[in-house]
Image (cartoon, rainbow, N blue to C red; front, side, top):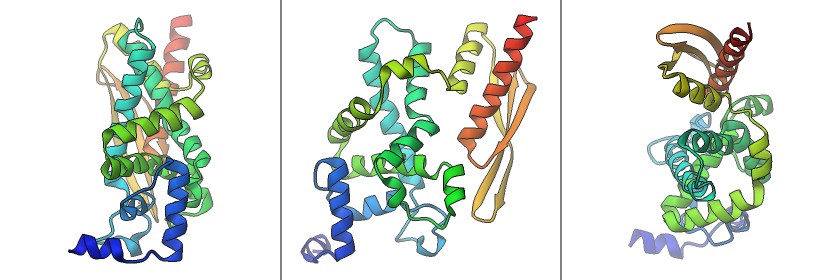
Length: 244
């Protein structure tokens, strides 16, 4: 009865505009608008977050898994003779924070994000990339796996990703480092040394260790950026040692 009444309730002008924007992005009509609103609701929107209106963090978790699975299958079929290390690296290049940030802007998610972050805070945080993953999670819950997979393949991978460029440009230092460690059969670990709340933003201090020995530490507002940068520092350090 509640669902029926909800379906019969006319949409507000704002909701109609939001639904049309979603349709333009998806290529089909969204069903559950509340899900998509949640996908763009950043945790900084504290006044709107309660037991009925959650932030996008749970949807981000789900969307990250769905996006990773679809991309993994796509690469598995595209490169039938490549090993696990190469496939892992390529997947990371596609779904890394920098790429998700760019995709989020291309889809116009920067205009849909609901947050209290300043423009500077938005650009320096992972808010846009997180919203992109949360959006994928919302599509999955709303329409199911097959339709979500079709959307990712046809509207993201085939339209917005240049495989030739991805093959040539290697800026995913975490994957490079992981492959190096796999080849050397060494254990490594990323450790959060500090997680500080500074107003509406968090600051992460990430330490990277090899075989239990600290190699470097890097601090940033984005955990993903901090991990990438500390991996880059250690990679460059190891490369210099190997050249001497």
